[in-house]
Amino acid sequence: MFILSLTYVKPIEEADRFMAPHMDWVNAGYDTGMFLASGRKNPRTGGVVLAKGERAAIEAYVAADPFTIEGVAVYEVTEVAVTRTAAGLEGLKD
Image (cartoon, rainbow, N blue to C red; front, side, top):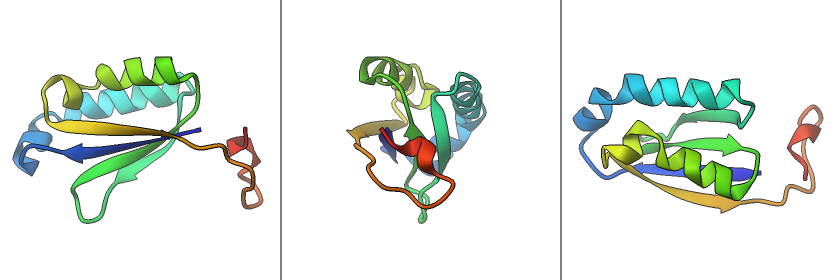
């Protein structure tokens, strides 16, 4: 599993300008089965996505995010070898 942590590098107003295409990108990530969960950071400095798949494919997908293309946010991609989960989340294990 991967944690995609995005951090805004431009003002929130810039992020808001590209939020609709970014959300289309997020929804497509769910449609393909790559994304498992996502949400905003609090305070609103970016967001986090839990994803599964091959690192190269995930990194290529991150590069196609409108936030990345427009220089609104940068991503940190962290791979996690999940070995234990709460009941109902067994699908997160490697």
